[in-house]
Amino acid sequence: MRVARTTKLMVEPPSSATGDIAFNLIVFFLVCASVQPDAGRRQSIPSSETVDEESKQTENIEVSLTRTAVLVNGDVIPTNRLLSRLKTLLSGKAQPEEKVVVVKSEPDTPYSHWIFVTSIVEDAGGIVTLQLEEEREIQVPG
Amino acid sequence: MAMGDIAFNLLIFFVILARAQDDSHLQWTPAKADNLENAGHTMVSVLIDSDSKLYLNGQQIGVAQLAGQIETALGDAPQGERSVLVKVHNDTLAQRFEPVIEAISEAGGDLIHIVEEQRD
Image (cartoon, rainbow over all chains, first blue to last red; front, side, top):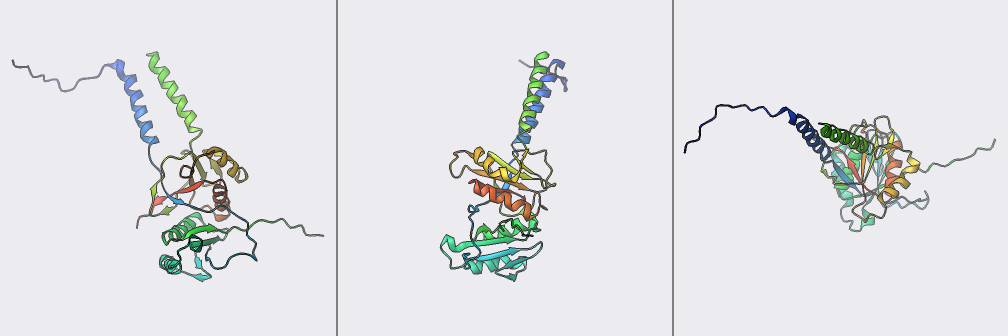
């Protein structure tokens, strides 16, 4: 039996379904918007503890950040040589406590610079530890 | 027809309700870094916007209350499920973001810095 070929190419959906179509479109776009994954860098920073200036351990690598520069143990290092420098300093250190890199930032260090440098420290195998200045209230007699 | 309208209004209601916990309406520009990984599902999100205001799950908060609120939000979650998304505007200064990072680590949260992939 031969089936007659239809020549009707476009078929309009019934107008009563418009609400349902709009509803399904909204749900579709909401789901698309909510499942967009975030990408990031995982960072493990040890919980804070108060260490006196006098009892501070000095054998750890110290990275100081200013607004634009990086100092490793007091020496200014260009950012393109930072990874190799840290890898050299961390080589031969097997214990986790030896791999601690103390990061000290000037108050005006921007986050973009900070995350760039701490990422390099972690890529070099270091464990980032923040050194924060504790605010102390001193009453001046007078 | 009224059925469709009711469903539509319910949907809008739940979207607005969900938005109160969401921080997608806040203004911030992510910094750039490489070797990124998928952040996965997290219960806590901390954000510092372009005006240096601090938000926890979309609600403005002071840095003094942050550690306690994160501890409450994380509850007894085991290690590995204590991730905290950290979204910091790229120009925020250390004097603002370092106490926030300290508060998260004090609350036992695992930091995930949300950044953009560095393209050379």
